[in-house]
Length: 356
Ligand SMILES: Nc1ncnc2c1ncn2[C@@H]1O[C@H](COP(=O)(O)OP(=O)(O)O)[C@@H](O)[C@H]1O
Ligand SMILES: [Mg+2]
Image (cartoon, rainbow, N blue to C red; front, side, top):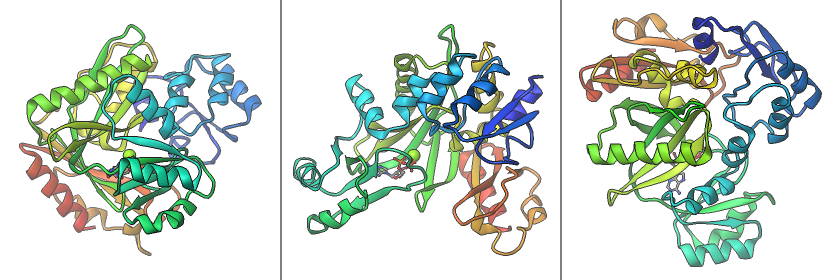
């Protein structure tokens, strides 16, 4: 989706990925199929381009340093380094006054026991590195089970987070240019199924003051990190009406996919503009509301889904990514729609998905 947006603006696109025939590779001019830690190939790649960006945060920060010898990396390796580890990320946020749930670093079982005493249960134990879609996470509820829960870390560094009693989850996708110009999309409201984003709609059903606060927090985070490019802030709205930052993603975000059909500028075009030194595009919704429903691999279930049935409602738009294997839980595409209210839009994408 990034490559499509870059193509529309007339850019040539080189893709670097450890896999072949990737969704981006199908759109780009050339695919470098090499490991993310192959510094010589990274350098060869960076010599060929004018700017490097990424849509996946688990690229080793040493690789971004190697790329930066030849081309600017946006956002830069420092932003990547902080946001790819949950402990560094929450320590950065807390240290700069951004609200987060209380947390502790966990390596040993005594550290886990101490955290449970100090911060209480329930809690969520997460691996500090490499988690996504709820992978590497355990909910802790029973003090007698802590030893077994600790085993789930398998010796890796973990983070203990006090469980947040939240009313809803929201996200803000923000963009920032080299000159410090900032723009945010409308606040998205997200619901998850099995820890994977399921449905997003905009604007979020929250009071305007809370929406302003969510955007201000996002702007503050992008400024503090000196981001050039895009960064998404996932947040909780707690049952007592506060906003807590859950996590950061230094890139476009699944919740922002509704911007393709829903906003004047898509999050992908915005990333292209921000990293290529162009002014940012307008972020407002083209219609009063928009919604997106994810399409996961289980929908294939031995046969191709019935796309025509989903598209029988003319206001529904289909986006498929061109991924090879439709595995259970894998994000394969999404449906979007726009309309006069969020309820209407959510109902329309859900009924379209049900017809698949
Ligand atoms: N401390 C927490 N309290 C309550 N729910 C949580 C907490 N941390 C995560 N969750 C739930 O798990 C989901 C996934 O966690 P997250 O930290 O966003 O990891 P990732 O999206 O990388 O898998 C969140 O969107 C939220 O629904
Ligand atoms: Mg998340």
